[in-house]
Image (spheres, rainbow, N blue to C red):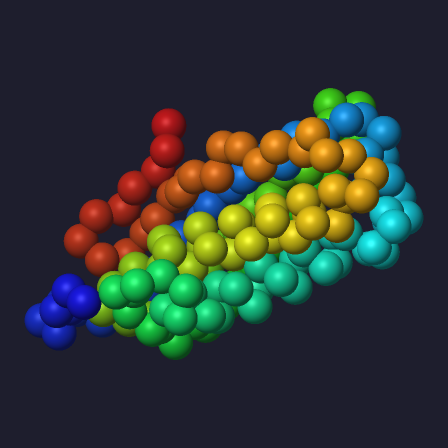
Length: 143
């Protein structure tokens, strides 16, 4: 692991976003909450939050962090056939929470996939990326 001992403890925040693409009928089932495995949105949200809390166990060399906040917001556009996932993680620490936000987003997307694969096999997870981060020496935002 990288030595962050000399870094200042600051408030840190990171936001990640991803899109799960599927047929409009599949997205409509997600929006209605009647997929074969149940409520996709609530299940994916909880999975993402749990994953953020376990990031250091999943990603080698990632520092374990005391998270002060994690949220996963999910928006369905049935007509476009998309489920957009936006995750946010916060901490007060010597290193950032980008990996926690990205892990939350990724696992939420995987959960959506798992819960709709019985309806459609052509589902694609795409565009998982860091949207912004604050705290530390440099703030950053995707343009």
